[in-house]
Length: 363
Image 1 (cartoon, rainbow, N blue to C red):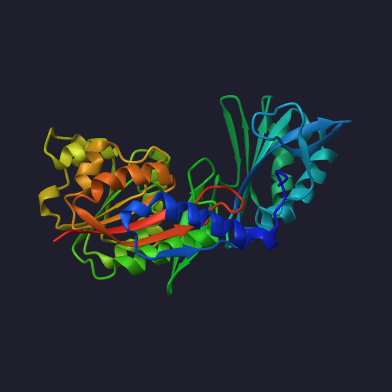
Image 2 (cartoon, rainbow, N blue to C red):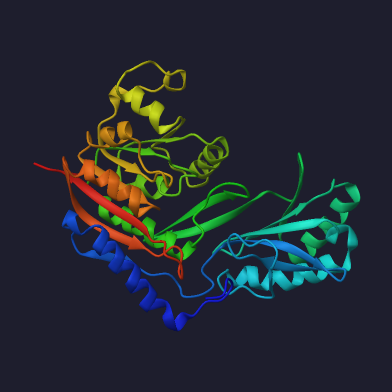
C-alpha cells in the first residue's frame, strides 16, 4: 500500500487479520469473547504532519517511506486524514506559495483538527520568524478561520491560540477537551469515543473511588468520574496536566483531584516509602479505592506499578502495545481474572491495535 492511500474495500479483512493475531497472542489467557471496535475506513485521523518539499520555487506536501530521506512522495490529498485537513491542505499551500515570506525555509507543517470542526496549523521553519512573518500568518489564519503557530529554533509565535477544543460524545453526555498543539491526544476521534464509552459502561457498578495513572489531558478521567465517588489522577507532563485542569473546569467535574507525579513515585507514596511534598494536602488514607485505571506508554507498566495494580479489586488497563500488555498480564492474572477484553482500531491499515482489559480480583 502506498504511504498515502487507503483501500476501504480491504478494511474489514485487514481488521480481521489483526484480531486473529491478538487471539493467537493471548490464547493462553483464556480470554472472554473479544469485543471489536472498528474505525471509519477513511478520513479517520485528526492529526497529520507533512514535510515540505521545495522544487522549482514552489512548496509541496511530502512524505517519506520509513528510513528513506532522498525520494519523497508528493501529496495532493491525504484520505487517511480528516475531511477538515483535506479541505485546508490546498488552501494553505496556495496561499503559502503566493507569499515568499511564508514559503521560504518552511520545512514542515502539522495539522490538528477535531470532530467538532476546530483546526490548528503549525508552520515550522529553518529561519527566525519576525513581525512581517507574523502579519502575513495572521492574515492567512483569519482568512481560513483557524488558529496558527509558527515555530523555529527557540522560537514560538502563536496566532490566536495554540490549542483546539474538541467535543466527544460518551453515551448521552458530551465532554469538551482542550487539546494543545504539542500534547498527546488520541488521533482517531471516532474510535476514541468508542473507547471512552466502553470504559464507562464496563465500570458501572464498581463504586468507591478511582485511582488513575498516566491521565494525560483527562481523556478517560472525566467520563469515568461519573461512576465513582472520588477520583485521584496522576500525570507527570506539565502541559498535559495543565490541560487536564483546564478540562476539569470546562466540564464542571468536582470529584477529581489531579497530582503531578510519575507512576513510580505515586506507587512509592502508596507504599509509604517516603513522603512527597506534592501530596502534602492529600489524605491518601481517606480514599476508598476500588479501581485503578492505567493507560501506560508503549513500555507498559514497570514491575512495581504492576504489583500495585494487584491491590485493587478492579483493574482497567488500556494498552497501545499488545506485547507489553501480555507481559504485564502474566503477573496480574495471578491475582485477577480477565472479565472483558476489547480491541480498538485506532490505526487502520497498519499492524497496530489498541487493547482494553477489565480484570477483577479472584475470590
